[in-house]
Image (cartoon, rainbow, N blue to C red):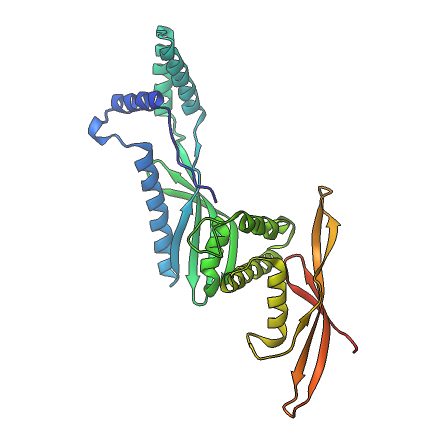
Length: 309
């Protein structure tokens, strides 16, 4: 997620300060947009922290994105007039009629019962035992820091053990060298693994994301994000867990099935390979096993066929 900060042109900011001053506020009490944004975020964090404490869960703020400001029409008129005044000042033009319009518009805005609403985009997590839920929400905050409405638009439940990797996944950081920016190949990995998720159900999307996090964990443990390496590791683990016993295994070439996506571009839709290993019967003899493994585009094993030797 890309985080943004609000910024006003300096001239417009000075004009707004003058408006606030004319409303009876002292210069020492004037609040900057940045400090008010911090207060809004703190109000939201306090609200969720208290709500989660009541139900015995742990809330953690992760990030805020760009703020959307919803203004009544009277405020929009005032803003547009101030912008005209700012442009006039650039060319040293003095417009007395404009000053009268601003004065009238200011009175209308002050008397407007509809007030400015700040819509904050918040990313946060809630821990509950062995699981953690990640949420994204649009939160309406009033100019008096009251939480007016909360709209959750994204949620995901994952095992607690994968929390660190989900944050890496969300912010698209390096999962090979944690704490650093992602390399181009890692960014390509994120693009590939996230593409197509919008067409899946919420249940399926959650399963795919968890699979992706498991892959990132394997990639970190084995210092590789090459798909062929990961497919071999996944195949071996499917049959032998994390055992490193000598099994005389053999992998065939990994074949990717290519199809066309909605844009007419070629993309890999599935993978397949043959896998063989020798089973030690403890009496000095071995049995040879061979299977054909099928994986989907997200490297989930979807089918295994035993081959006749």
